[in-house]
Length: 229
Length: 229
Image (cartoon, rainbow over all chains, first blue to last red; front, side):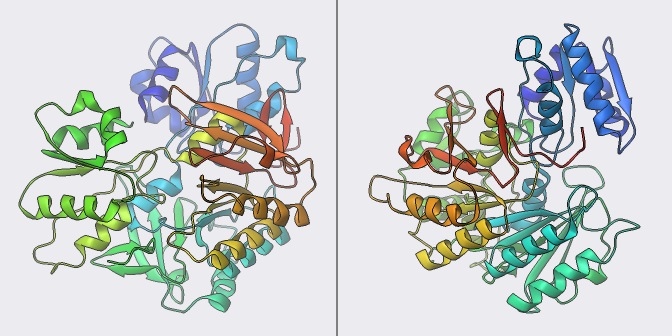
């Protein structure tokens, strides 16, 4: 957590967030009101935050990773803009360490070159749009970061990623899988494009697929920038 | 700067970095050795850092933004892996707030959906590779983040981005330009795909091109995640 994020929480009278994330910052909560909800209740949660802010309170909506990458920043801004400009509360987005940055650091240096970030969650996005993006990212030789790669009910999409990427890259292309980056339970697995879907992947995993130049040396996944060394 | 990054610098005996970045952390430098070099001397700088570490010193190589995104993490790992595993120093990559995350926060919430990050610098990458990636990112309706969009000598590439993107997206697609995100000189401009290359863009700019759903409301650039509100 950056000093700026900590300060935003310390200055707030009301803290709004998914229950699990509120638990992670318990030391910052005494003396504050909290509004916690379960997963999948993002709209209720952000609407409650906006209403608190409209009533004159200083409110912090908390997120894991970066609230600006598939996070709550957009939903808060969308809900705020439904009110007339004259009564809208001011919104400041405080950037954080994104899951893709955290995962990359655990693996080594896979993001030294151009990369694409794709979420496989098709709750809010038609699968055809996601599949087209996988195809374009693979064809463009982007390093590919996959958010939400798999859940209990959603298991076939990551196999599609493997199949599409294999059309454009070799079976030995390095693939890194990171769980809970920067947390106590952090762990990582290095695999290959051919085999990675046999590894443990769940909704807490971030999957990073190397580009055609990515290699593994001494246990680190590196995409060379192109320096002649 | 995260507490973890600050701690890594505080624990180091030798700090290595581009002179401008050393200036930004002067308060952390007393009592430490420093190795500063100008721009474009990344290899010398990182090689010096590796040699200091091999001599038994605790060394911190500093970067702006995230050292794991087009940063020094890869070069350090590449140089270390040239030595036998038995004598290699341990390398830890400390993730930071990437320029794309910082710029997105300034603009609003443009990265609520899949995005591609592309550097236009062709010093180390053939232009054909970069142009193919622009084409694929535009065709895949990714939000596109452009690093190194323009320098004094390199001015035509950003015009190519505009031309290629206009084949796939409307002329009114929002484009955000951010300078010096999170620093005192921070500023941002909201423009459109048709017009953005008429705005001031230099090597300190980060350019964010919206996808087909991105809009501007109340001065904020938002890519909706797809919630029905």
